[in-house]
Image (tube, rainbow, N blue to C red; front, side, top):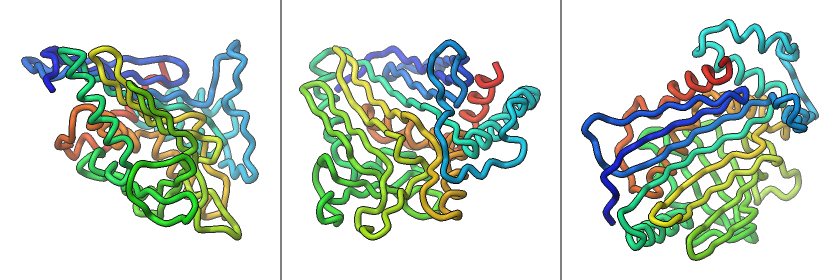
Length: 302
């Protein structure tokens, strides 16, 4: 499958409802044309939007002193971006803030036939979660394991609605779980929707084991649009998990803050790219998330 000779990468970060766009064209390079979108929307919504994104209540808020004040965000606006990013992420994580995220990679082919071939290959990879680790970054990739929804035992093959994914994050702090809530396929698209869940083997006292709570959904999708193949990962209504004991809640909030500071960017940027282009070496710097934290902070203070 041959890709076009144009090369263009676009990264967009949305924070405080102020988008920032970053474009770069590597001099002299002409591989595939691609579009990478990495967007974040923090907990504040425009006054006239009719949407209150940070209204979700927590059974155990545990809000650190000073974080509950509106003036806290105003104070953060005077901080350098690399300082403001973690400060604002911590504030949102510990006060029940809600954010959205989106990662997208678009590969443009020279013909529809080539795009169709690429889409079928990408669809096959999307429907094989046991191999998702190979689509992540070379350093710090998450590991995914498919579990049967009825027996709660590991299994091979394509996922089904009601199955589970056990996810081991690179932080080594214990697995997280999601349930496959929806699986849709058509001639030119495929989509998985997952929701944070408890360990399916835990029947007596099921506790959501994830950094986000079960109001959050993640959408993994692949589609063909003419001669383009598009892979995307979306996070909807992301908010820190308040289920479980005190230690579990604190850990969930810390993980949430880290994700919003950019820790999940290397995983999903590599994942979407490798779905449509094939695995490539990722440099150590590309897995740090520092550049994302900087852009998120600039957008939040813009």
